Length: 305
Image (cartoon, rainbow, N blue to C red; front, side):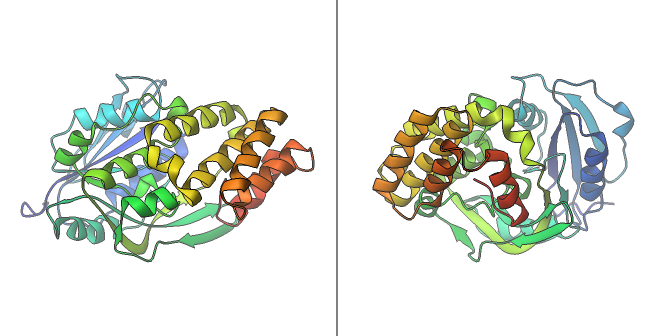
């Protein structure tokens, strides 16, 4: 029986066309050594649900469909609105938690009442390679997130206090392709509360082939432009602003918009000559390298654009 003294956790797992990986994700949640109640909500997005996944017991699994805007953000918000658990955790359908994730993170979250979110490190799996990525700090500030996205803070590591997550406005469903919705949540959380980080590795994150990005470059570009408008501090920051403009340069180059890519690459270099994304964008815009080839090389080393 779950320990009633520990806060219940609801884990929201949005899914779309990943039945085998989904089962791995759900099994990993149910295998948590956390002593409190853990419920999993599997939210099917634009797909017929598999109700055979549902089960009861100490680690119940509930199967639902996305009733909000199609996409990752809408699916997550569907789950958020359907639970009253004190704590809410996210897990992507292609990722898997290590058994001690919740038992490590929940106490860290509860140490301070103004902590809204706790994150942790990850083990990236790409083909036959594994790379550990951790952020060696206990607290993450807004200034740090403006300077650096901190890719170590993956959404599958997020555990929120539900009340504070609702106060933030939940997950942004207006971001094109739900691109960067986790970064937006991090920024909003750091603006209003505290972001706690557990430096150890407690989640396995699966990286996919770069070909999955081919149809997402436009959404990526549109979302990045949104970030510059929504967060003026990003546009004003030398390093953080150059990071975003370098990403835009790469996304426009990947779409074949050469002149636009050159303009954004130039803007990036003027702001921060050390921003590597500008030079990668130039390599793609000039035809020296294909964007998917570059991404594949980055992914093999645990990085992305």
